[in-house]
Image 1 (cartoon, helix red, strand yellow):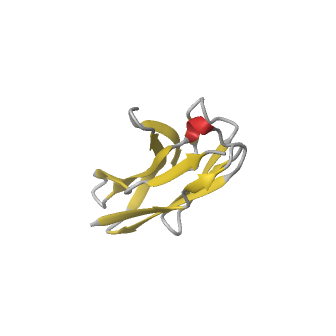
Image 2: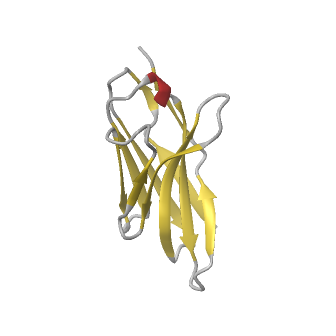
Length: 120
């Protein structure tokens, strides 16, 4: 009942920038939290950054100072601006959305992932 769609991945040179976008649609009352995770080949999925409905954010130490997460509550959208990208940022990036219904029960949804490749 909820669809999550990401966009914005691609190939970028080291030191470059990318902006990932994600939008949720469907049966949504509210979205308490949104986040970006990533998974590199052979690695576990890890949190990159998260943002709650009130705007509080959390970042992985590896991206702090290089990434900025933001959201547009009117569009049920979340964004990840990445700068000074490094080869180790290469991964599939997944959008995570926590949706609440009118009974305040929460459900978790994932996007299909978007590939980010940092290479010269």
